[in-house]
Image (tube, rainbow, N blue to C red; front, side, top):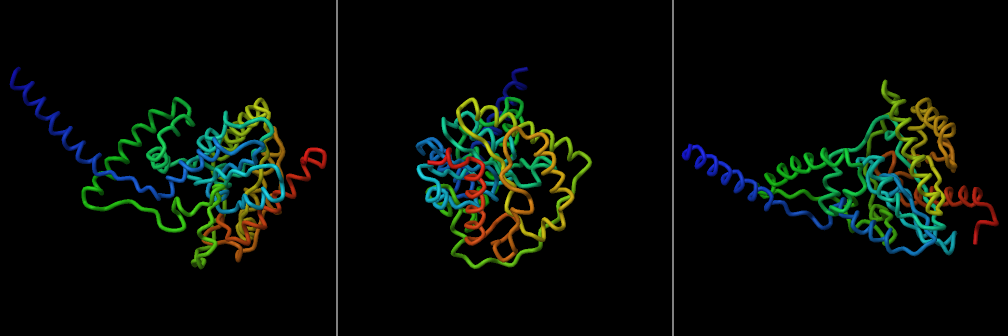
Length: 313
């Protein structure tokens, strides 16, 4: 028995030493794209009301020009919370829910794929690594899965660290690529790379259930916003005209479901959100500077029309 206990203790000590070596080899890159969550959350906390808050994935990060919003809609301060689609709808909405203030305007714009299937991935772990407080944006039932995912991802990254490899983001996908409002702007001075045409959107067998769950989450967010004295709006994302043409049936179905069930206004139509390919930087959801300016001005026009002259300062 004593020998068994001694061997068990030795085994545990060896495992602890291995674990310590692995975890000590993890060195987060302060300029990693996911580290931008630190700045975005600080901006959300510190920007004075009234605010226009943009919520979504990388399509929002790339396609929004907050200085234009502030110039055209004084005295609103613009906050771009867009980061990446792979964080999923639960995270995107949870990050802002409960933090809206009286007089705020929240514009939500989700990549269409969010309505087809859950987009959340291991990238959530990266964001949590840089800002553990983001755990508060998930439902309790997700926390256990996230914990196991973090351990697995940490072990893999620690092993790479032992081999001298560090995970880094490449420009423009870096924390320093964002401006003071949370817009991704570094790519606006970079030559656009060649990229493949976007894959058309197709509804899957379980897509209707995902559409229903996503709209339910949007409606819950809208109710919470109203209780906080804020107004929520939905905007279809800026996409290439060719993507819309090839995905029209699925996209228009999503739009019809939103207009049928969503409890707050939709600012645009899928067709009106389309832009020509030359206005995009490196993917269907990532406009360059011209695309971002057009997209932003279109949204401001639509928002002002919804609010009416009496509501605008």
